[in-house]
Length: 176
Ligand code: S3P
Image 1 (cartoon, helix red, strand yellow):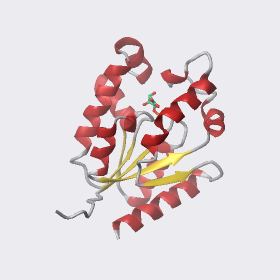
Image 2 (cartoon, protein in one colour):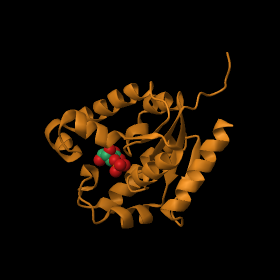
Image 3 (cartoon, protein in one colour):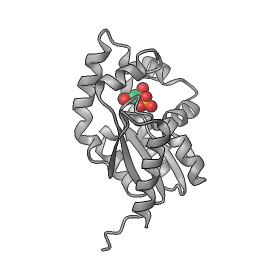
Image 4 (cartoon, protein in one colour):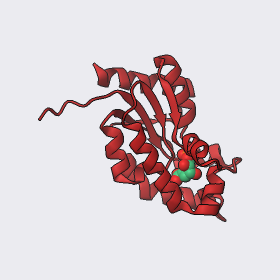
């Protein structure tokens, strides 16, 4: 069996606030690829916001929606996919993405993430009494999953534009 990967798409994974959606949108523009954000897809399909889904149906239902999206994505070509921060915590989601996409993880320290998300209210997992502790806890839990990505890109001291260039460089290199 050949071990050559089929890289038709680019998938961005990583923690909340690492810039997956903004980097993904710009990367898609430059590649002239379609852009899909898994959270937006779910909100559109279900007709509810992520916060409403968590509140009314629970996190387990949301994770099932994520698995459904991941399955639907395997037929895509020429698409940049920005994923929700917890999506690759399920190893089968990561394996599925890797079967058709280069998986790039955007990385940031807990402090940087906190600075980026502290004024936002749309993430149910961070509506906790101690969101900074929650960030550290989830990052620790998910670190091993994120490190299974094909490429890790640190976003801390880079502008969005620089991160996009770095991601595109890795993508072109992987497709050579
Ligand atoms: C989540 C991250 C969110 C969204 C949901 C759960 C997570 O996406 O999927 O609130 O478990 O980390 P972003 O990473 O785009 O914020």
